[in-house]
Length: 249
Ligand code: PEP
Image 1 (cartoon, rainbow, N blue to C red):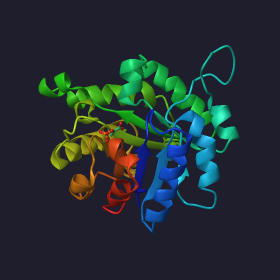
Image 2: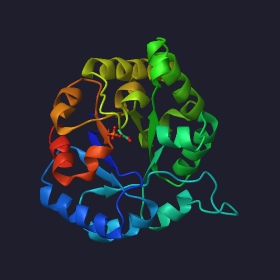
Image 3: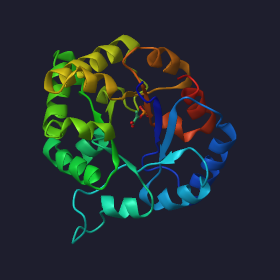
Image 4: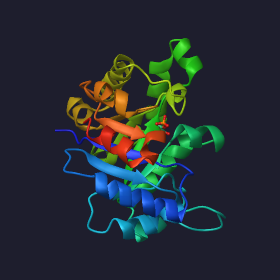
């Protein structure tokens, strides 16, 4: 059985007070769920989020990290530092990191290695831009992203990889991939994983969908057989919307 996961990517939102009050709201909303629930606050709010969620099942995860362990990389945070405060999962390859911070597939391969070396799980984001989709290249773009950042890994490393298909044209735009479009790419990804590794691996990796998931469309998207949950941006900033999405699993 693949893990069902809903992760909230807060991006560069919420100062300390807002982080604490959103977590208070999340704790009120949370109930037994068959999904793993994660939130990704900014670096400065990771520790306060841990404190606020002590003995609670919501996992606190990071939005990014540097590929090196330490050194003269002003402003950066390493996997080692994240691990030292108890962060066990990191989002890598988000399209905003790719677009605004020039993160390439090759760089992301290094980041993935650094995270795995530190025993962390990776939520690896990938997805095509609108022009790729219009040109009919979505499947090949996605395959290249996976190949260049992940396919140097052994099969066993995938125990710690969660995939997140995020068509760039659907992120923060209010435009969502149809459940059929999401299913099509998720299925394609499983085929690509079978081709490179085997069926067992392809069937075991959780693949989340991200891109304008809201309470009103979550159930339909999550009902698709190859969609194992969601990576949620905007709607994760509101506790009741976020939990409506979690409960749609
Ligand atoms: C995201 O940034 O990962 C995301 C899916 O954002 P939104 O839900 O706002 O489209």
